[in-house]
Length: 286
Image 1: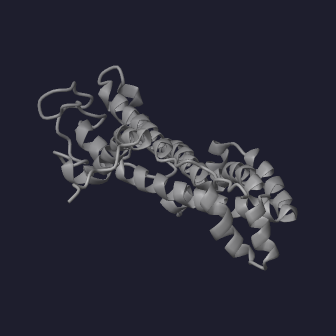
Image 2: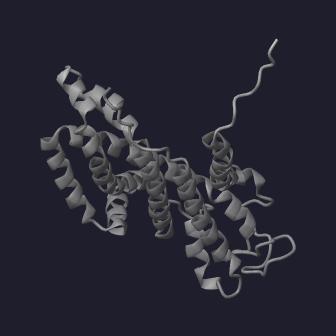
């Protein structure tokens, strides 16, 4: 009886292991930071609204990052201040990517409608982000986080639509999409089954960029006190509240600033690492 032997390892299969390891190493920081931000309120050693040390006390003792302007523990407030930012930014990034994916694909499949969508996007892109946030949130005084999410989505969709429409145009003009259209498939089928599956790389990259932009917009709203209000623990609000004492205790401003930067950078790198090979391979006729 002939012994069974394992098939020889091909170069592609041998390179698959290191490639997966590189992807995991780039995704892991984003997962850890996101999990830490979500679980932070339960990990805080002190109550976020209780004075622990003297105002702007130096780091050490009961407050490893020192105290803020009211003597509250900076570490506890940093741990508790990221959940709302993460949840809000993820919601904005998902909504913007989903809306832009549908509108961009429809624009590529229906050029007449696409011209209207693109002209509307061009007009909305002329509105500065900070001004747009102020207009939406100040005209919606009781909107809170919902107003910030609405403003961020309205400001983010125009850029995303232009990107998706440009990537979807060659896909919509390809032979298999035209064959499906001639075969009587409806617009919804063409968008969901023919165009969007071939834009996975573009949509993942877009999600990473939109998350970074959402972090910027949500943090800007918090810095302007449009969203969360004192005494809430919010990273952007902490930067605003403690800017006057940065010389006395730099950690009161540096800790939330670094947290915002690391969160945006790690999620963007993770989204880029997860981007699959794009495009549908052409089949050579026999």
